[in-house]
Structure formats: structure tokens, C-alpha cells
Figure 1 (tube, protein in one colour):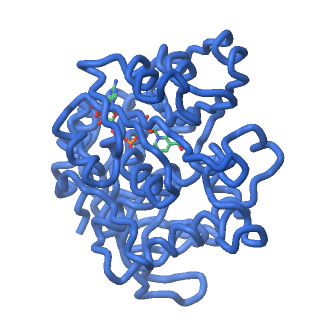
Figure 2: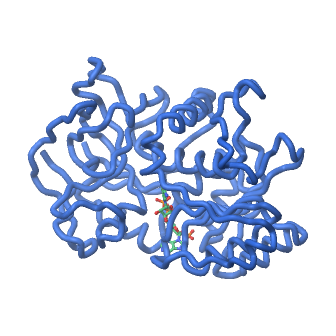
Length: 347
Ligand SMILES: NC(=O)c1ccc[n+]([C@@H]2O[C@H](COP(=O)([O-])OP(=O)(O)OC[C@H]3O[C@@H](n4cnc5c(N)ncnc54)[C@H](OP(=O)(O)O)[C@@H]3O)[C@@H](O)[C@H]2O)c1
């Protein structure tokens, strides 16, 4: 079968479509004929060996996909599914764990489905870690994740009675556009950064309230001015380096930086003084880890699938490439030129 193979950890020049053997199923896995793949920033980092846990090359790359089940553990063949995997999704066939595949909504294309799992679970769990998702069903009637005591100190809309605020970095990207759609449903006041006015204009149409072009303005200053010096309750931070400290300075009392990436390639720097000053915190979020926790993923899917059923979530696809032009998609992410998700057509 055809697959996108990374032959060494040297960057995009090491990517090529090759013929490889079909996957063999492990216990709990289902075989999927892949039609589309969702490209993630993690795929770009993988090409340089910059993503934790990358197996030794050569390896078939790709973390998420949409397609049709060929043989399922419960005889689910023929079902259209979207799925999350760590590797080997950009191939004509992939073996996926059945708890990491979800039925594609009838009204979605394969491309839309391939753009869903990583972006929407990550964004939803960001709001969850920030304490902005609904209270457990027993308290509010809405399905949601119950928050453990470890979430204490984050924003609690039920108790505060005010509108929560979030600053979303790379707001026009894959996770960013998902965070805007979810934030609108959660009633969050959203601030977002991007390098481009054009991208910001598109995200505003999705519901972003305040767009900040960081090439032209200092986002710390803008947030301070727009919030009358108060700051935001949470920052979705995926840049790393000095931006972790800078984002902490954008927080209001008891605010939380949700650190879920390091797109600058630099280790996050902390500003402990800013953390002390406002009892603020920096908390990590890694979908690879959280996806292993059924008690977290199932309620998240329950809420996300309900919104999908109501037609309230629409994955944003900026660019689509056939598999043999995948490198062009990777380059868009590298240059920060993508809008929303870059999708690869596999079939
Ligand atoms: N922890 C997790 O579980 C998890 C899950 C998913 C994604 N992530 C992380 O979240 C971030 C976004 O991922 P994504 O797949 O949705 O990508 P993306 O946001 O669609 O693309 C990256 C965007 O980041 C912005 N950017 C800012 N500084 C950049 C830089 N130095 N280099 C490249 N891009 C830069 C660019 O947008 P502007 O030009 O508009 O600023 C670019 O379009 C990545 O850091 C990724 O590793 C983490």
C-alpha cells in the first residue's frame, strides 16, 4: 500500500510516498481504509525528531485520519470513522485502537472529519482544564466532565457569575479555530493572536471577539488595555520560550496558562513573580497522555458530539493536498501560512 514515510529525522526532505506492507492488527485495533489525513504541527516537529516518543525511522507518519472501517472488533465494517493515532495514519490503510475512533457525522465530508479529533479534543480539554466547561450533569443538567479537586482554583463560571475571558495564541490555526467555535458555545470572551490581519478577519467571522496582530502590537499591552488592566482567566499557550512568561502576565487573579505546545522550538520560560502576584499557574496539556483516560475522553466526546449533532461545530479547512504533495502542506505549517487545518487526501 502507499504511505507517507519519514526515512530519517532530517526535516521535510526525508518525507516521501513509498510502498509499504499493510499493517497487522494488535488486540483492540480495527483496520481502516484511509481517505483523508489531518496534518498537525506535531507532524512537522516529528520530521526533525522534535516530538516526544518518535520511533526510530523509517516510519509511516500521521496522527489523525478519516476513512471506512474494513474490519472492526465488533463487526463494524463499512462504518465511516475518524480517528486519532500517534503514527501511521497517512497511509492507504491504518490500524487504530477502537476507543480512538469515532463515527463520522453524516453531514461531514472525509476532509472535515480528518480535521476533527486532535483540534477539537485539545481545545475542549483546554477549556476543561481552565474550568470553563459546564458543571457535571447532576448540578446543571448539561453533560460534562466532572472536575477533580486538582482543577480547583481555575475559573468557575457558576460561582463567579461573570463572563470568562481567554487569550488564544495561533487563533487562526487548527486548534485555534476549534477553540473559537467551542469558546463561543461556552460563552467565553475571546482574545486571539495571529501574524496576519487576513487570518484574524476570518476567525472573527467564526466568533472571535478581539483579534491581535502580534507583528504590529504587543499582545500583553493590548490584553491589558482591553480588559482595563484586569487580564484574562486563561491563556491557551503553544509558543513556548518567553511567551509562557508573557502569557502569565496577561492573566487575572487565579488565572491559568494552559501550556500545550512549543511552536517556537524554545523551552517555556516561567515568570514566578507574575505567578505569585496573582496566584496564577501554568498547567500542561498533552492529548497523547489524556487520550488514554477513558473517564476524560468519553464525557468530552459526549459534549462535542452533541454540539456536532446540533450543527454547531464545523472544522475549518484552509488547504487540501493529495498525499504525493504532502510536503507542501507541511511547509505551510512551517511558515505559519496555514489557516485552520491542512488536510491530505489519501484515496
Ligand atoms: N499538547 C497537545 O496535546 C497538542 C495538541 C494539538 C496541538 N498542539 C500544539 O498546538 C500548536 C498548534 O498546533 P496546530 O496543529 O493547530 O497548528 P496550527 O495552529 O494550525 O499552525 C501553527 C500556527 O502557529 C502560528 N505560529 C506562531 N509562531 C509560530 C512559529 N514560531 N512557527 C510556526 N508557527 C507559528 C502560526 O499562525 P500565525 O501566523 O497566525 O501566528 C501557524 O499557522 C502546536 O504548537 C502544536 O504542537 C498540542
